[in-house]
Length: 388
Image (cartoon, rainbow, N blue to C red; front, side, top):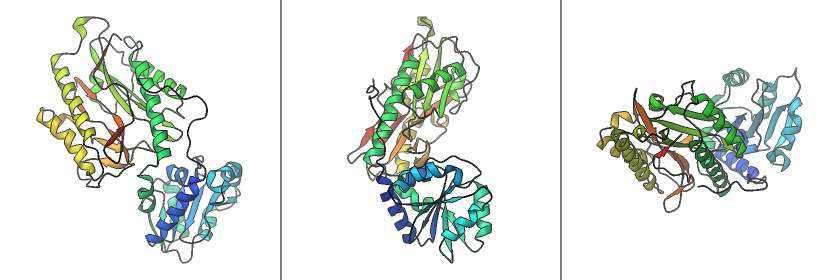
């Protein structure tokens, strides 16, 4: 099993790191001919400023001009946490607060260089804020902040990988405990509640998802845990995860519950299906190395599954990037010819789903290393047949 939970404070991104990130972002603004980068609440703000601000209708925004000082605009009632965030605490950004009756967009407008021709805004900024910014800056062309931030965030540094590994090991332990506990006679929703409680107990900031898909529901990749009662003689797909220190876990394992009855084990068809899936996941992982196109990893898994007659039953991409967001670049999918680079982190998670009957999925988080794959999850990948 995975490494035990460490004692003491968990690893964290060094406070000083945020100043360097802001400097690189500002250089990216200049290199792309932008006038400013406008970063709202969300993972981009956490990445640059280390500030996990509240997601509200009140505007919080980091203004990064092509030249000059960087400013964090925040409502006055949130001045204390804004001033305590790493970017401000280290002098990489100043704070400008606004009162409840002020117009925060006007404050942002005055911080943007004149004339404002091209502005990049957070990809996930609320439409409410984007529309107000557009009305206040009608001559500006608005573009996605990923033009600048995508290349910065897609390659993880060693501290980010350490947090991803810590999250992965914690999720490994949760999978082990849940899979070896009582399952038969419980509802999927009840097991999902246990998963969430265990993730938090293992150090996660929160439990973002807990897919518990039993019997025919295992053929639905994004099944929402329901009141269906788990029975002997069926598979359960467990797909769980959430952030730990801001960086996500995401693991999927498939178990088969027998109730202690030898006649309730997996049938031959399921064993063949799972054997193909296991080989596809292993080969796709083995194919990870610098310079390999993202779509190649998807193709490796898809060719093996297709050759076994299950091509039509593999209905999603092979993987997605992970970091401050559960799904981010790079995506392992046909049509994405981007070459893998050392430090890119992503899931490798092929699945086979026979609608109305059953399905299976195996998922690990993998980092592209200098010489090949670095697999962060350690939980066994073979079909786990348990009494339940």
